[in-house]
Image (cartoon, rainbow, N blue to C red):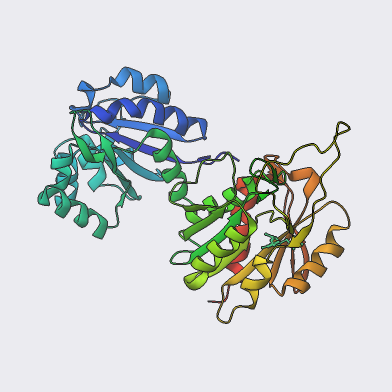
Length: 398
Ligand code: C5P
């Protein structure tokens, strides 16, 4: 299902050069299934035209409080009734000041005051305007009033200065908006995850690794973040972007992954071991690149030694986190998964058929707990991850 299916969003634009990013945002929002009603202040129309916004949203754009197209002439009431949220992007310093004080002197500020749905703002302004105590006071007031403040980020600004106050990019705003609608099942929890492959050196240029893409682990990290958790992701090498709001600690070998997990596990409430950790590492790692020993290409002899079992070790900790393991099997899933859950001493083990789901965008998970096997519907890895997070939240001790 699309991430914003059946959502109607009132998107308010106020005056600022960041308006140029909103054309892209509207495209992405509608692509995700949202119905977008654009409302602009008069100042915003100097930066991007209502024509552009109407073409991209496919719906009439409102600027004027006296717009006669609304049958009862009450656009400030009607536009937000039945809406799922109002998002102000860009939110200028002036507009936030008005919001903080409940002023209502144009259509957008009046509909914000008259709304009966959540309000999100994405500030965009010069760094001095952002740092000004008056702006900071207003932002604090908005937060205290239950308004969600998205960003701002830091960086180069259109005015030529560098600092805080840049509006988030369209894709970041979209991610935050989607996250806003996810239930906050893990609010206040710290979720620690491992993801991706480990890679064990053979010599200075060769490694032994596996085909784990990290997609399931990264999707779970995103889903845990969307559910309101603080998320630490200990990750082997992948080609994936780190999910927004997630702290990622990159590692290479199983021992590095073990050490990073042990350093972060102290205050973790939940540990989800998704990584495909190499069971063995090469014992006799060569300090020089291995050479063919004869014309026929005589193969070198490799000796192996076992890697630490990170999940089993975390599961044994006194006052340790609630542990979830993964089992990627190629046959006899239920049999192997049940045995693994018992061997690792964990309350929940998630099984899948490795050859079907490795590197794929879809997955088919089966949960194994003390009550037995519970298959989840097959689907997109992010949908599966959100479902799994809900299953974890439901099983967690309070
Ligand atoms: O030990 P096995 O590979 O059968 O079990 C898989 C589960 O254990 C996965 O959750 C995996 O992340 C975790 N694991 C681990 N450390 C290892 C091997 C596996 O944390 N050395």
